[in-house]
Picture 1 (cartoon, helix red, strand yellow):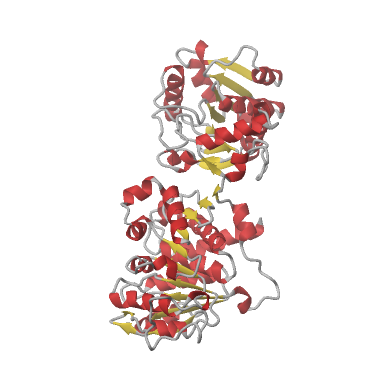
Picture 2 (cartoon, one colour; picture 1 turned 120 degrees about the vertical axis):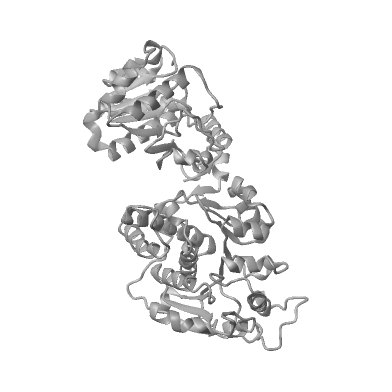
Length: 545
């Protein structure tokens, strides 16, 4: 699903109209798609019928097309016209000829008909206002929406609310909302996801987000703007097609080896969470590189792993550990660095030794002399693809010119606080422009950035960006990021490219949070370890469909 600003969507529609896909045709595609989606999802409510709040713009038109189509299929369909439409409106005529009913807000000053119809219908389509609104709004529209909200709040049985393109009163660029805006059970957006729908507070109003087309293909030549859009919202179909294939004649080497260099005496759990997540996502072998004192405490909890015991200082990885890691890279297909590291100088020096001692492309790094005890690329291979998380990111920020020392493209997985350390931006600045921030630094650094948080943003240096349309407190737990990092390194180890691994891994991780909350019956009690079992269910569903 493409992800667009209001101006981009308007430009797409204008260009498409000029090149043969008329506004009328786009509205027909959108309205029929809306009807098909609602009728399929809520078929059990067919006897209860559908009521549409209809505005004067395109959203109202989409709603009328959908109501007429559903009336043809035998649904009781009623349009409540909030804003006057032309007397000869063909969409109203079509609804009438299909057996639908038309009511006018202008003839219902005390909203008695509105109350009766809301009580008498099982589904309410909110098609009053679209993407072009300016807040605040007044007059009839405000009155109807306020009355609707009040009636729904008092109803013993509420109809299912379906927002057409967006809940009325939402600014589809900024996510600002009006007090009159209805809370939708499902938002059916047209052609592409409008960026305001994934911003707060609007994101709290949209319910389940679904998309229907307007007649444009993915790379449609009728709109140059459409072709240029590289921002997308991740979907299960995309993830399903992207995940590695599982051949029947495979062996453990087929699915790669992930090395996870992590942990310290104060943060032992990070190693287990990341290692188990890498295995659950299908990697063939996981090697855990940890400070030696951690082994006895952890080994029995993940018997499938192999272990690389690292030199330490007081339980944190020592700078001399770089040589041990380098000597054991021969069969490693991807490496995760950072979970549970701590921020000691000796661990920072480990990172320096690791990144500087192995030149990229077999060339000597100018201006650096490797320690005598560290072997160079002539004796050992280059670093494998990297995923860097948690304290590893904070330590990177203390290394000059760190971005150029990583094999490109690495996957960096900061939460907003870690992104602040890496960029010297305030967290508030990052959060107010999450997409732009991730894109800017992915381009500057030359690496894939996974900016974690509500509706996680993944950006790669070439300009592609994906959003994960999940905001769940189930994921707001210590250790959740360790699970995500383990999933991503497991996918990298199986051969996925950096961006594909980051997007797929982030989507699976987010869905695991949702399923964990469903399993426990609450998001409050979800802990990071619960995500591991839920991952299995997410993968099962991807493989079944």
